[in-house]
Image (tube, rainbow, N blue to C red; front, side, top):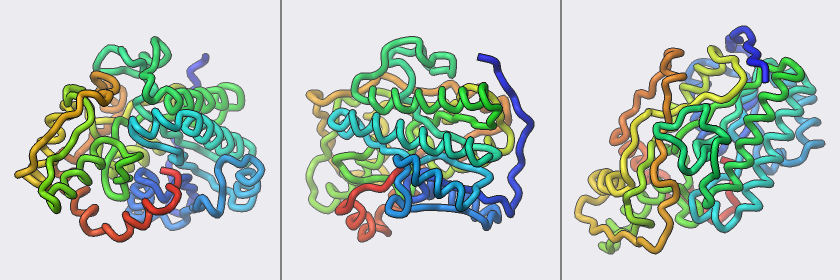
Length: 331
């Protein structure tokens, strides 16, 4: 595939910017970032207002609102349990969401689109740290294969629209994310917010904290406001085929993560590791050289990010409970 590189496209403060998935973890952070920078013509649509899986509805919405820039961060997401028990939904929803939005963006002449995937796109046994060229070099992690396949198709879709039509569509692959507006539901959340909730509840009950797996698996974590900052950076400074990794380049074991969260939330908690539950990929950390060479680095240290996330969790208990009683919106 030819590597088509288009000129940089700076965002202007009056541009019509659509954040697809604004109610989720990433989308809400992008909204905060854009508003903090003075952008005032931001377009959003809730799931009730626009089903992103419906091509006709998406086409009509794009024709009516005429966005110039699109942050495509909507999707159905979750941790090991959710991925393992709902693979059909994870594959269908995510393929449909990026399919409809990318095609509508092409049809209505969107100037630039940024698509976000996930580091789970890489093979289970990819060399560590994982570089962008590891994509499609081996079997995927079985516990999130459906989600990974959908995200891989999204990357390729952006590349093909770039190749065939000259669209300035780019893809970024963030590592594990956390922060305000995360999903803390124990049935569908990722490991870090799940642990925050478990330690918080243990603080109230005095019970031990059960942790899935052996604790040996190693993961990398990126504070979501860092990702939002990077998305703005990429929208203005990156225009190439193929995806680019976004992360810190630093990982730690799940056990060490649990100990760190314990120190923030409930230092007296006892830990119990359930090794009958899956660890997932044994190690996953991204090679972020491609990104740092272009001038961007993460700035929020993990402990600081956990402290900020826990503070948000404590302050928003009512809204969190309400959200978990309803159908989850796109992340």
